Length: 573
Image 1 (cartoon, one colour):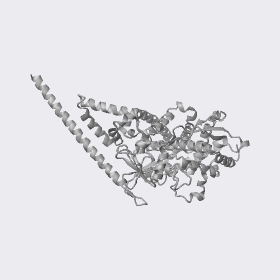
Image 2 (image 1 turned 90 degrees about the vertical axis):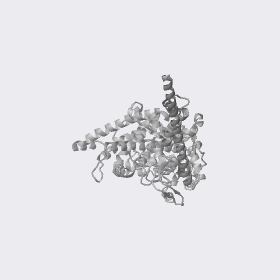
Image 3 (image 1 turned 45 degrees about the vertical axis):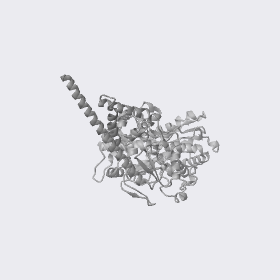
Image 4 (image 1 turned 120 degrees about the vertical axis):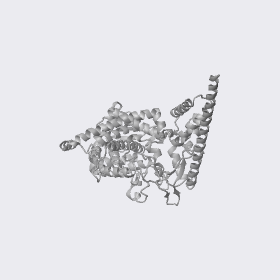
């Protein structure tokens, strides 16, 4: 009898506990949904002046440029809120206990199974851009339909305006969470920290520092071109990006901290090289997988585990290099001996940099800047150079003019030197025209730090995300005549003077423009010149690139060309 009374009491208490949890969950759900509705109304009110493609109530415009696996469609209204971690997690952990309480005897089991199901769905089915090579064309078409600026919605309560605009603050949604491995370098830092680091790093990109890099770039390019000999006599096409990416990585390693990695010939066996490629791949995947913008979800995923392991390898390598270099530079005599044997590299500049208070950068700051330099100067340059070579392969008439100019500038020399860079203006125009058509970074997002009134009178409040759609700006037919045509003469001085300075922004613009743009342009000139000196490039009509917006511009089906040795006796072939 006593046992029965205890059971009744426990059952009664459990019943009240269930009711309390269910009620609390319902209240939280109502509260969050109300906040969501209010936020949506706020966004709609402020974006009325910026019409765009009609959004779905729940999906926004994502369904027009993204692929949703069928498994998501039935539960999407709840899981879509994962884009907003603070909203989603509280809803998720409150609504599932109340729904599942009648099914599972344990609330802890219910939460566990719900979270397990959620993570499994993320792992098996990624909500990401379609990847069919049409996204950028659709963005260009929207820019034509909605001139100057338009609003895009990524779900029910997150939107941004796309227009050619640059400000000081980075947008947290697209870079802050996907480039964590590089630390708070110039790419991700803000305010006083960014201003101090930018001032300290600027001397590292002075012309006198960049001059020795020409020889290093030429060495790396020749290694790549030697590898291409196996394709030169077969007539078969090959994919460019993998080769070019290794070459730019090789160059960056030499210029950043005088590291001879032999990555172009031994890349598969070098742990650091593999870690760098792993980080680039996983950062790109995280950027286009909306659920992975949530740190908790990403860290719990298999890709998050791989990311952390790669970070450990990359960071330990960089820290070891910094430690050894700092020790080598402690003794003034040893310092002079060390620096006299080699060029002054990026790491030397960082270690010797001091602000007006004679404060130097910490090891953590130096590591962040080296990692940022590696990240910004590796994939971006590889994307640019791959599309440049592809463009020249598709336009042999321009390729021949470039080659004639290059051979004249070299005057029989085997390699490029600093003074030769200014002797190839037509080649430079071709490089810029390819960067216009295929900008390595297709878009840049910023968050407004204060209310902004634009030149046409329209306004946006602080906190809104504004994206400069560089790919679309470069193909805007109101700025560029026949924008899809490859025409290097657009960059003749007299034609450039007629356009806005913000019509062509492959390296961004304003105070946060690319600090290494001169380094990048020099690398592109050297690589193009040495390539055209040795090979004739030919397009493969069966492989037309399908453009993909990743962290850098990529192609779904690769970037393919055919080559054959250049014969100086048949220059017009």
